[in-house]
Image (cartoon, rainbow, N blue to C red; front, side):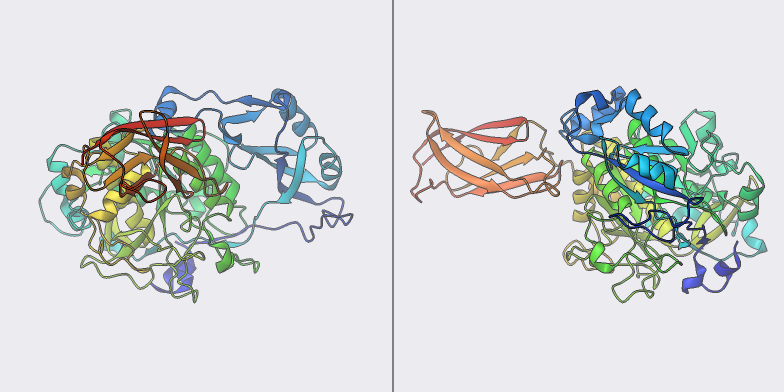
Length: 580
């Protein structure tokens, strides 16, 4: 534990401190030097131009699991830039003109690379390069956890002998034990965790490894396949501490000691953050991990990493917390659009900013952002909150994030307590996995909306609690029919006074500001009524009410009618009967 994390539970100094060296002192666009000295190097985004010819791009081949998830939310294959990757020719050209290629981002349509001044001068003249921007590689604070430990924390805190042990309170607040009594464990649901490292040989994870449910792991810092501590630097900064505890809250399985919220799920583990001083930690690792998780068929991404203020003086301004600006926020929205439930921590810095201290990507439209409460349901003083710059409520939900019982990485059989939105986040992600196991056809918006509907503050949400703490069991047993892609549901049908149209939207419209027109025709093909549906996120349910009056305000006669909606390249049609 760093000395900063020992100074107090709710102070700014409790956060782990990430450090790195920013080598660039100047970045100008027109004619001035990109790098101050010819010997300088810089990590940069190299953005490709829009509308590139086919010779520069190739379609991505998705595995069956990913295709199934995309189909569930109505994603049309090859619909945008993220369905394509760079060709061999373009990769070779970039490689020949940089010092190192780090990643290619399908979300940003950009290469992350290490370049020199000479590289920059060559790159900017390539026909397919749009622009070059420096990565934000700052000395930064990461809103991860607030922790406190003593020697007794290395062993089980009490002798209470029951299946859940000390983890019962944090699960019971969400009614997870009752849901697990129904036989739900998250089986078949693939969860990706993005964190700083994981101690895989801890006893809490033995069941996962024995059952081969650790599907894949990748270290985006050292670019290898091992997320456990593997060198002196890892050991010095105890890289695996935070991720080990977070993972245990979802999948730990040690009866009478610690049980995770979705202990039967499958897992993808991504190590993206470097803890400690003089270390480069970058948002591009985070974006790369999201794309990696998508390619491996993740259903849920849970991450307790967050970004806002940096020790070199840069800080995301409140106006930039608009759900569309930060790189990590863009990536979170992208994951949501592709059918991934993206669960992220709100942050632990409510008192550090006058606006509530919300961290990115917690401002994302597509993020299920999680705050922290104590065991009695009272908001934790450190729990960051909104509203966002555009006035949306954040967090969305809360879970226990004070005195959580977790696995610790001191040994293969050590446990302790800690707190933070880092710990409430995996509880919500695990709860969502139980719901998705029960309703595999539900998309992210279905899960989020149903959880909100059955939460403690569903009737009076606010910017501290959001919709409150959800009751997972109520959400699961309420088997409400969810609208399928490709159809328009009409209810009531037949109808006498009014009717409602419901459909699952499949056009990405927030950024593109698209609209869709719903039309009603009689059997002769004449237009009877139409309605403009305003931009919404892909996968959300759209509801429209009609009073059975035509475009001129006249009551329509008895008969059979057709309702039609086109969203992007997809057409939806429904049929219903009006009786007078």
